[in-house]
Image 1 (cartoon, rainbow, N blue to C red):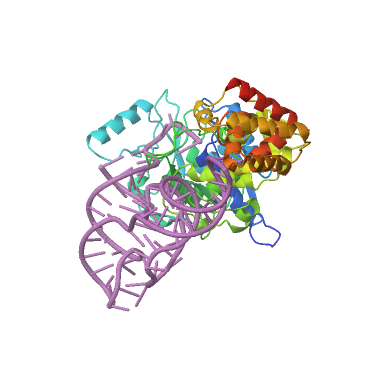
Image 2: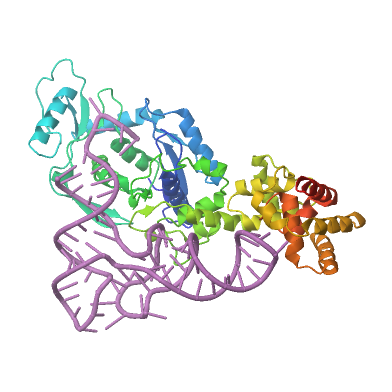
Length: 471
RNA sequence: GGCCCCGUCGUCUAGCGGUUAGGAUCCAUGGUUUUCAUCCAUGUUACAGGAGUUCAAUUCUCCUCGGGGUCACCA
């Protein structure tokens, strides 16, 4: 069951196999990214499988949410999406095979009996496990019990998982295994069984997943071996923990990947952030998407869990915004109802602002703060800037503006220089009051830039307004 | 509790027997700037602890401690 890539080697086929119980979160996205990258760096395939065997807990919306997030980030799965809910016939066939071969059997123990067994075991401080009472049952089955199907698991010996991240891990069969259920009383197959069947049938030969699956792996190996399937290579990626060092949960801020879009993060920053969480390539911090594909190797995945912390995400995001062409920024801004298409000074505006924001959302906010005239003035700023002969200076600048036709920042700046020279004052004497007049507060880009963006008429209007409001 | 995994600056990490233990982020300070930010420079901070092995351990082994995961007719 191998596919071959163009070089004639066995093609690397990875997969992401979420169960659609909610949106895609950071942890899932990272394993998906790792799987995607590893497949692509080998000219292989990255497949998507939706694990929706539990009808009660799954929703179509969740599947769509996952696809939506993939789409935003530019991760595209190869081929058709596999839905486990549509593969009953396949699972039934393999279960029958195991039954016929005597590798699995029907167990007529009721749920009540199972619970009872478990309670006894717990009371005796024994490991809770199925006791194998129907393993070699030959008699007449009890009436009124729909049987489950259990697989005959080895009762002794060692199961070895050769993990690409953690190394060789061995489990003792008697410590962890019992004849676990592969099909429920209603006939539906269970997780550890379908995972093994599907991974094999889909040709997946490299499984990259969270290390919370590590303890499932021996069970899946039991299934592979019973079915005579070749076992894939495993890479168990350590968890991402929250600031408290616990497993990431919905309470830890915005877990839905799409929430990052709303907060103004770019796909490139998020991906770069995640690829460096638990993986590294020397000291390199910045990775373009194609570099990730080129350089990613699961052997460089870290063995220990990492703590999720957005400081670095913010830094990466500002880095990518800073280096993004204005045209792309313009498109992202559309999400925030900011249409710059026809603005003649949009280049100046964007160049000035993209250096000073951490998110696209912040960029949107700061654009609004410039484009929309202030309605109030920060008290502290007024106190600081409007002292002395500030009004006189502003009037002098107004006079300069009236007689000039400035367009570019340097032209507005030149007029400021004139006032400074003529009145023999420091630059701050005109800068500060002007800034407060234009924006209503301190901070922000260069004043000449602001004036160039809003234009002469609006600049004069704001200055007049500020003078009347503050005298 | 059983089993399994993990343990380098606050955080993300480099290191693969001999290093002044490196980078990034954060924070602090200074410089640049009309403001704020950017940018540049500088700085504080780490090998969990204890035994071994070795001429030499952050690196190898064991123990302790600490953290995490997992033990379903969920996935």
